[in-house]
Length: 82
Image (cartoon, rainbow, N blue to C red; front, top):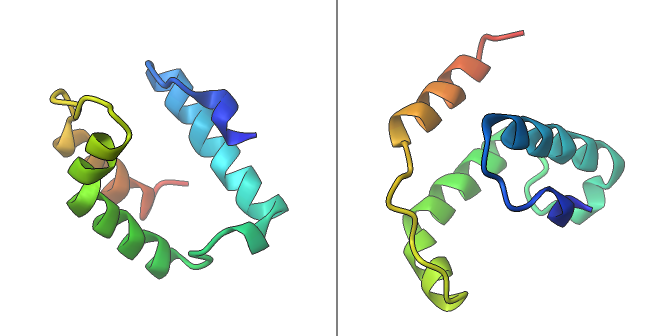
């Protein structure tokens, strides 16, 4: 279960979580609303745009230490990294 990978507090935690996401997609594709890369990326952009509401609705503090630069570097590098 993907919830087993939370909380994520390190690079290794994130690597394990992303690997688990990939495995979950392979094993349970019918449970995924966004089954192609374009839809997944569009949903990610929409969620980020609305994420303040998610944190508010779940009574969590909005993270103020998010490194948007690192996240964009990860997404760009994954386009060509093997």
